[in-house]
Length: 549
Image 1 (cartoon, helix red, strand yellow):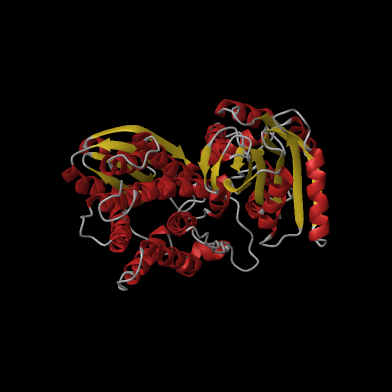
Image 2 (cartoon, rainbow, N blue to C red):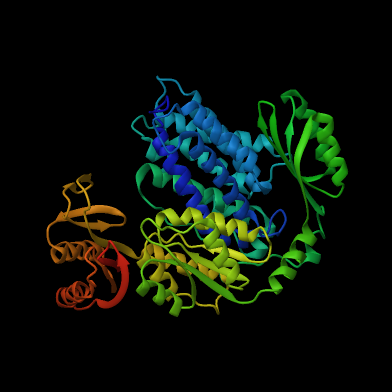
């Protein structure tokens, strides 16, 4: 079904998945950029959790079916973001998502879809500024304004399409993000861009990808030779600002909110009140916790109250992390050979495979069993990425371990990532390097059709050989070697220095190593400047897995 105004629910579903995955991948980086308003190192995590809540609510409302009524689905997404919002930037993000969802749902049949999405971005920006007690430039608000202004300028062209709007908005966001240190002294002193603005830029990049298929180049997040900062010592956190963060949900009539804002504003800073229709999310930094909660009681019924003492938060986290040491890797692996490869590289291995994908509990147990203070998770399968993110979120709630999930979608991407793992680097830099390497590893596979079906490459019959590129069927043939070499040529079409080939076990139990060796010989003959590495992976259903780096 198409939402009135032309924004399809299928695109929205794709967007929330891309945005959540992108924030998950960038979470550690964004956390490390967090120096304003309080350098507590959680902006990336809070925005990821907020976006995850919106996605989960939308998925639950639709069951993943884009054909349902979009109105209730978008309302569920908005409510999910509001209920799941965490931290200053997360609360602002929830207001933006709510405004965008409202504009999409209210569009009429005569509305031009590009104008609808541009106006949605403008309304999201206006709503976010209105929600903040004292808006500060050089933050997520500035990035949002630049994006929405660019979107409105784009639709001046009557030929502009929805993808053009998001391309313009995402590019403007990246440019505005780069200017944030010029607007906020604390960012310039730390040599970084604004963390919340970076998170919003990641989300807009995901929107552009959802509409156009393009993956924009990320904006620089450091200035000159400055390094990504770490959170300040606990003693420095409250030196110039309030000591506590107070958050609560509030059942209150809409007309009670102006008085609530007026009562809260003198108590502290970073005041954000978002919501509507009787449900609100309140966030403020204060010294007087009781007064902040009392203001909510006067306005309505506050619940799910969360109070965080900034100094204690950092000190407790450090104390817990001190009980653990080093950095560990958790990898989902299929087949005995691949499991051995990851184990030899130092990973705690979680067995997986078609029909045997690991549960959240299995990955969580592996994270905790690693004994490491920092853990990198390689899910190596699209369906396992979300499971790994939930496990990582659960593990981090204990405060004892930092966890980053590399969104590796294939076993060979995981192999590429673990090959560049370097414990001597900072955690953030190691995660960035592993993530970049995994993403740049173009991957493919060869399998055999088990039933009649229509694929992206055309119809297939049982026994046909299927070639896979980046998770999609790309070739249908009748010869394993011919299909495998065709897939290799497609992967090498974009260039590359290294080919990795992993032989598996076919349906008859025969080791596919001979096919792997033949393909390696083919690459050496046809592409003599390219190096080839062959492994015996022992995976089922896929005689060959391949990657080009």
